[in-house]
Image 1 (cartoon, rainbow, N blue to C red):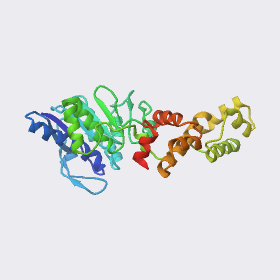
Image 2: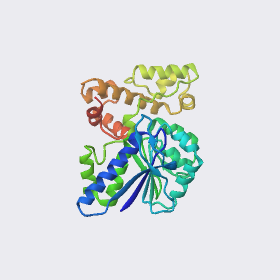
Image 3: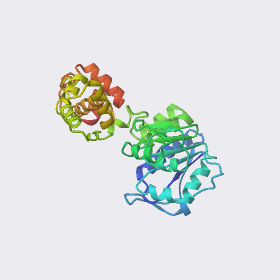
Image 4: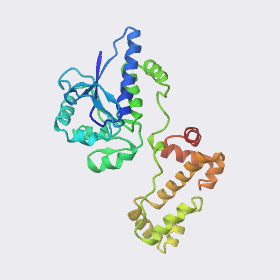
Length: 319
């Protein structure tokens, strides 16, 4: 029987905690019916106090177990109360200690901040909710933050998951590792979800608009690109609009905006195509031409590279 311990604290995100709980308990019931040992799942908290989530849902909890005990998996959920949990020296010390003995530690959403606070992600690649990725990278420069994956195996013993429901995806993957695809697939079907959802979490993120440049000529170039995504927008044309040489323009634009002109043009075209896929019934070919991609195949390759899914899949999900 594998012991799964899920940390609770005041203000925890309910689904960060309940999602993995449901996956592991569903797998436990399925395995028990097959005469196999599965999981023993517990919610724990400092002092064993009941846990009230950010939305007011109250959950019973047990005291923090001995970190040197037999614990297979530790789950660290996120939530609005996370900063207070990070400031609790006893909680951070427990996370640091239990990570030395448990087989694996899993963070969900902003729970990555608690894992990082305990030093579990130093020198590692990690993910978190797309809206908090920049903050995680800023607070913990030793962590390589990737905002797109649904989950990441950060090192041999630590996993990090993206926002909220991604904890379910990761828990399903761990069940698959432990007991095989058939068991994980059955649990996923019971929960009415994908065993492996298509694409990364970037597809769910709000449109990313880069900051406005301080120099007026560069701002005017940004506005021109956004006003007409389908225009040619070659470096020579954009440099001419800014009254600069192409080389000087490229350097200044990159310094001011944070990415090269060509990458910026592609980003704006992608966001324009996303909106049209969501809001219109036009064909992918028509949208590709209208947004400056030229062909449906070019648009498809761009979507797969940037969002991890095809335009057709994106439309089915978000239209």
